[in-house]
Image 1 (cartoon, rainbow, N blue to C red):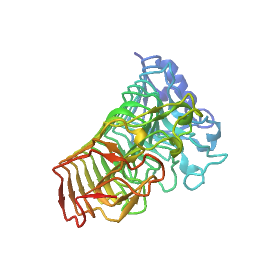
Image 2 (image 1 turned 180 degrees about the horizontal axis):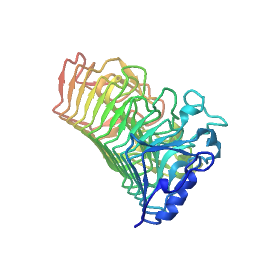
Image 3 (image 1 turned 180 degrees about the vertical axis):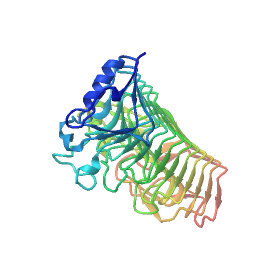
Image 4 (image 1 turned 90 degrees about the horizontal axis):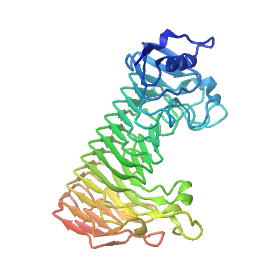
Length: 425
């Protein structure tokens, strides 16, 4: 297949290389390669590669694409520097820094307005079989990497940051889902300066999130079926931030759930992660909250339905110095259709007295279980926490929250726990 160099073509009179990329895509054709030599390449308009093309920089430290932010109003909502379509599967992007130009806006942090429209000017919008590797994403206004319908996408060994304070938009660093399957997110680094959630995947299946380093951000799965969250290091602020944890939840917060239904996480393995210092939330959270936290899906939403979750395994994780609880499972009994397993975890240095989930309050402890029947808590070690395990919640705000029955608690080891090994809320 043909290989072309971007510098075989020229920037236009404004200095933009967008038209040169289009010419390079056409010259390389389907399955071709575009080499982007070391240098800085301003981009004025979104780019759409052809199927199975490779866009290869000479290294993220020396090859940079920079959005011309004064032109951001011409970009559509959701458009990125590189965008996939149904007719362009199999694209690979590597060895490039994508600088969103957000630092050129003159607006501190993320403020929506005529020149900074929400979700505009992202990094890469992946589709089927896209690979994004060894890149850097900085100062980006929209999604850094979007995975909408991205079956078989791989995102690996990338760096996410903002190279000066207040220059990043709040949309996710890696986000999306929308029916995606087979996503692999591996060995990425989300630095302390990155904005938005590190990873937030919604309505997808078979999602692997493995060996990533996350500083002051969170890993979130919403309505995901099947997958692994394994070997990640997640570091939070010592106080005052909800970031810095692993969170499995429903998609019920989205308006679309009213029409299409509420989906809960199920069949997910959360294994061998280290979570340190989430000052605003527990270290690992599994929630089964219903849409709107009000009436169940009923005749008022006839096309919607509820897909229950459960059969999630929280195993071999280390959780230290997180807010009020180490691991917590809570929600509405209607959202949980199978037991969860919490085993072989090490939880230490939890302080506080209580933690409010929004639909019930737990006593501070190593592990809190607020909903479910037949759940298994096996061979966990809890050190220097107010209590060991808290079953049930108090002060519940909706019917069905706080129901716990037939819980199997085996071989729990508690050290320096002044309260109860097992306590009821």
